[in-house]
Amino acid sequence: MDLVQNFPFFSIMLSMFSGIVSPVLPPAAAKWVNRAAVTVIGALSLVLLLYLLGTGESYVFMMGHFPAPWGNEIRAGVLEAGMALFFCIIMLLSLLGGNHKLLTEVAGEKQSLYYILVNLLLSSLLALVYTNDIFTAYVFVEINTITACGLIMIRETGRTIEAAVRYMIMSLLGSGMLLLGLCILYDLTGHLLMSNMREQVAILAQSGEYHMPLLVTIALISVGLSIKSALFPFHAWLPDAYGYSTVSSAAILSSLVSKGYIFLLIKLIYRVFGFQVFHDSKIVNVLFLFGLMGMIFGSLSAIWENDIRRMIAFSSVAQIGYIFMGIGMGTQAAMTASLFHVMSHAATKSLLFISAAGLTDASGGSKKFADLTGAGYRDVEAGIAFTVGALSMVGLPLFSGFISKLLFAQAAVQNTGKLLPALIVLGISTVLNAIYFMKTVIRIYTPVGDEVRSRPASGGRALYVAALMGFIVLNLLLGVNSQPIVDMIGQGLGMFA
Image (cartoon, rainbow, N blue to C red; front, side):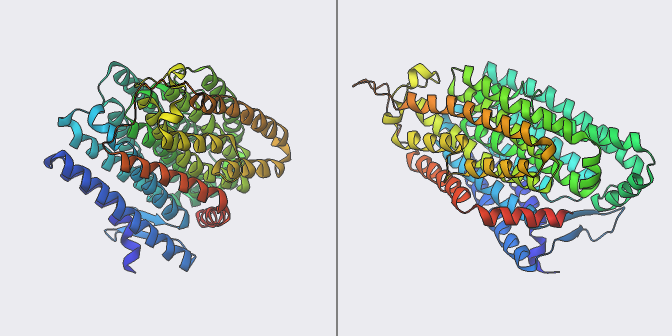
């Protein structure tokens, strides 16, 4: 076995070890350990991605070298390595972009705790990406839930505690449904490894035996992960969780946590149920309907908001609707569009939350639209960054959001049964996106004469601007160099199958 094939295991263990050592370190040291760990894991993921692109094949790594049913497995392919690399980039830029606010948002004695949570969150995301074992997946789903809840409530205001409780209730509901589905699936197949389960599911589907229990299992797992991903109408926890947490937490939660659950769902569709079995179950139609509803109602809620952070949060409801619309179309092209939008939304939503922090700081700390008038002049870099993110969400060419909507439209054209509703809602959602994002851009660039409420703080300004520029470059790369990424996603889905 080549050394590079150990990199997924090294990455998970490094992020977990970083979380373990952080409590005994002073906050400054814990911060640097966290940044170093994320950077090293990103480098390992890049090397692994290049290796897999060269070989053109996925591989399985047996932990402890014990075969099933006693052992646990990690599986690495092009899609897994690419997603791990992308998650590391987003997390690093999100932490750098919110670094200047962390000292005021989190009490000094809890700074180290914050980095424990971030490290454990990264380890859980990597485990969800790489694991080939459904029990391990469930364990890290719960670790992901607990750390995300901690990132919400660590700010310790009344609204964040309320948001964390609401998030925990909804997440536990989703986790319960997921666990029940996995238990039934284990009872039906007798296996925990995804590849072995898929063989048994294919036999059951072909014979027609246990048809109803298998259908119930698919429904429980799909709905459970949909709830945890904040698919409409299970999104009530999301606006407060994103709107009142720390800047870095909002960027990480909106970009990574829900995407980890979505990636796991897609993985289970291909690696456990089989794409055709999942499609024939008709669960795709339910996800398609909820996705369309999320695109509309998430955007309408964003239009009615008067708080920029909550407006961006409600926009996430609409964007998650896009992803599930693609999953619900039930075609390879639509699944590719959904995975590309996972990346596009992650890059853009973090950019919006972090740039919005600069705009509110330049407006006396107010998040109300009336007070944001002219904020783009008071914080030039934040204004430019927010405008780029807004144009991407609307779907202007050159930005990643345009490619996402183009891929969804192409996928809809190839699916005659869902062509009209998909294209109609895609068009309506785009118009609604333009209404609330362009309204905000116009607001921040409306002159207010000589009035200046506050100016950007100089402390940590260089890192803040660097993070904004990093997100802008990432967004443009996804927009103008999308074909290699789309090809990589297609190759990765082929490896899944």
